[in-house]
Length: 192
View (cartoon, rainbow, N blue to C red):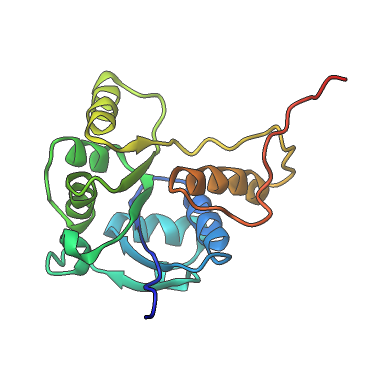
């Protein structure tokens, strides 16, 4: 019997931080996954601005769904994605997910992840946070999502933005239960 490859959904919204999207997708290339994507119209604009690229230029993602296509696979729990990452996640997207709104396919797919008790990771991107942002983060946390702002680790001494983004990509993968080959981990200082 043929084993189905695990399916992951990546949603891209219009917040800054597209270098994290590129880095994460590059790290996923080492794994045996099916990866699909949804990109908002604002996400497309910001990606063009920051990476001079369109979502379709990203490697690995085999299918992109339109944000207004509610008949697409991610709109149903039967599509069987094991998880979803919203990277970067705008505060508007966070608010829609927290409120249970399905204004577009990204919101609906996130709602599906929550109702099916599957992994939903939101890389919220805004600073500073206001009270509404924080309350919305608590709402989605309580509903089962993971809030994982794009905060690179610097203890690995990254020397470029790409290396810093890679450290965050590893953290995202960890939250999804994915083991990235050659991922560096903190070992701490061992005293003799």
